[in-house]
Image (cartoon, rainbow, N blue to C red; front, side, top):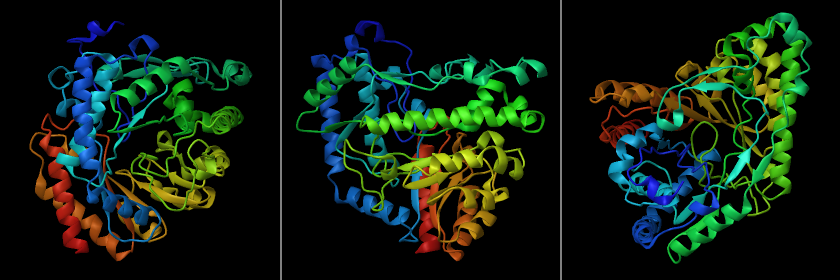
Amino acid sequence: MKVDEFVGANRIDQGQGGNLMVHGWPVEQCVVSDHDRAILRKLGERLRTLAERPYEQEKKTLWIAHNDLKTEQPVIFIDCENGWNEIFPWNESIKCEGEMAGDWEMWLRKEIYWAEIMKDDKVVEAKLYLPYHAIDTGWGIEEERIGDPTQGQSYVWKSPLAELDEDEFEALDLATVIKTPEIHIDWEASNKAFETAKDVFDGLLEVEFRHKWWWSPDLSLSYSNLRGMENMMCDFYDFPDKVHEMMRLFTDGYLHKFDYLEKNGLLPNNASSMYIGSGGIGFTDQLHGIPGQITLMDMWGFNEAQETSEVSPEMVREFLLPYQHEISEKFGLNYYGCCEGLDRRWEYVKASIPRLRRVSVSQWADSRKMSEFLKGDYVYCYKVSPTDIAVSQPDEDYIRRRLHEVLDYCKQNGNRVELLMKDNHTLGHTPRNASRWVEIAREEVAKVYG
């Protein structure tokens, strides 16, 4: 698509977890006009000024102590996710005319907004993180999505293996259908974007590649995408051998992909400012990687099984955790959980995941029980309900009471608490909700922790 075709286009932010640009640009789009360059350099100057504040180093120090279990001081992190499109409506906010330049502008505006307006504990840096222009082949078979999330739409999906009858599924050799994922990088386009960024931000920002190919070996999501949610739950009982067959293929596929990334020097340093797991930042002094030579043991790993929230703990132990154990063994530290309620399967997870450090405490978990389970031995990653700020006029009294309640018993149990506001599909079309939530969270932390 030509640059001028993007003027006035109906675009939305495509960033993911913690402001990660996921998709690169074809070589013909890797250009920045003088008009766009002036806009980007002005924003780069603002970001550099913010990044040089002593406060950013203080936040980094807090995250390190937090992830290394050396402080009881809670950290606060918010990612507006789809709510960014209410803070920065593309056609109103983005002034760059080129597609790539517009993506960079959105990324910069978000970083600056985090620092100047939201004021949570996210560390902003004098850096621009770029994705590779590449293809992940996935499993060679995929679901049909009805609805387009890249346009802000919800979607449902049709699973390609859902309509097989019992005999067909039983007889299917899954290895003929499910292929090993491969990463194919367009180095010409990726390097051109990289060199263009270095030129545009010369003297202002460093430029690094950063991607999410390593991020989540989502075994249960992959299964439900290919078989359907209802089938997955029944398959645990009706077709246990087929479940193991498919989990084996998924596990081998992820391990092959991780091995490829490691051998080719493509793993990012996620023990730094990078978003990890299902929320939070990875700063730690306990993982020590060399740029360009990062190994899996230098990284945070992540496993979850949120699609199995209504599956018994015993079935999770049998069908998921052995494979997740095999994957998590490769990583130096591990994060576990997303939206599933881990209180009901905690003992199995605890016994299965080596070097487990960060644990998700979602709205589907008994947060008090999880506080008692985790004590000061893990990071208590509390997922605050995004519905609290998804309306135009949030109930601030309720937000305060709930935060205070959780913080109070977490302090009693010596938890290493992290307040995470994420999964924000909307801010109630009231951008102020995000920064106001951070203010309230800080006030309640001060009341409980002093």
